[in-house]
Image (cartoon, rainbow, N blue to C red; front, top):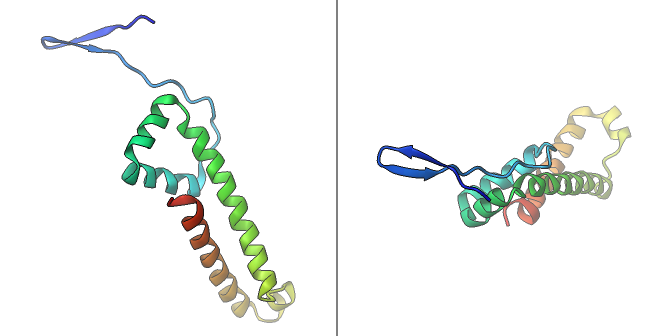
Length: 117
């Protein structure tokens, strides 16, 4: 491995670059939330993963897991509370309110179980 240097004033600074990310999948909202959490609270882990070139893959996989968990929770909670398509047809406002409540609870669960840990 050959290192090159750039002269800045009286100093020679090594030309360092990060390895290219192999995974180009989008990280989505869940991945972005976790990335912000890592940057603010787990700086060492964030830096190591970034330098190893594994951050993008990790965040993409976490995003997929979080999205699957969120959708599964919304479906399960809606079934448990008896929210059906029939309710949607009969009383749309009640259906929207109850589904928003379920989505909010599912989001909080995903955040506490996967994102902010």
